[in-house]
Length: 293
Image (cartoon, rainbow, N blue to C red; front, side, top):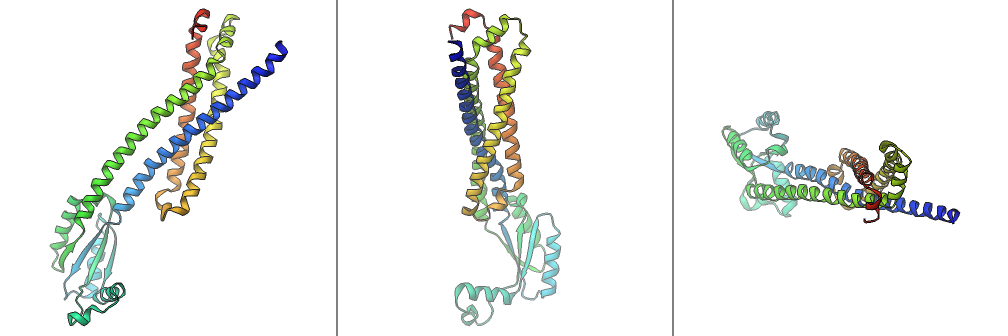
């Protein structure tokens, strides 16, 4: 009977390990997606804010050299990410291309003014900073007016702030759920070997000696699960890349590296902690208590 039971016991234990690896991998993939979403949301927010532009309309008497000089002066400011000069002639040609007609034929001349297009650094893409920048630029006698889409900036900021907060709350909830799921899986794995733990106690094995095989198993499962989770996450990211424009600016190698590290750290820490808690629980139990659970 013993010879027949041992292979069965080994197969059952091996099946439990496979199940634990699969369940842990799925949980880590979910965690990795959440971490990557939180990290890329910051990049997406910065990318949207860096698309905010200020149009600095220059006077008709301002020459090209004066316009470029003002552009270089603005470019040295902390709020300016990129400054480009658009002459009256260039503005007219752009209008012709967009409208399909020549506006000068109806206006009796070139109706456009030369202007500077200033792309703003993300940290300054809010209404208070933009208003202060606009007031400063209007004080220059070469500037006729400063325009920017205030409603668009306000709407973007009102949208991005709740989204960022919602992602952080979702990340916290999912981390708790991931911990609960992995902890339950580890407890089931240790539970099936609770009588082995008690037997080792009876023969005088120390608690640290009893913990060692369980900890080695936990570390092995953590490594395998983390590697599999990173592979699956890489496949998901690779599949998404062709579907989203400019995704390489949002999902960079930095975010991917941080996500992989987070998966490995979470996998190691949660597996070791849950294993220690589960093994210690059964180590503190008496023989009679093992039959009651």
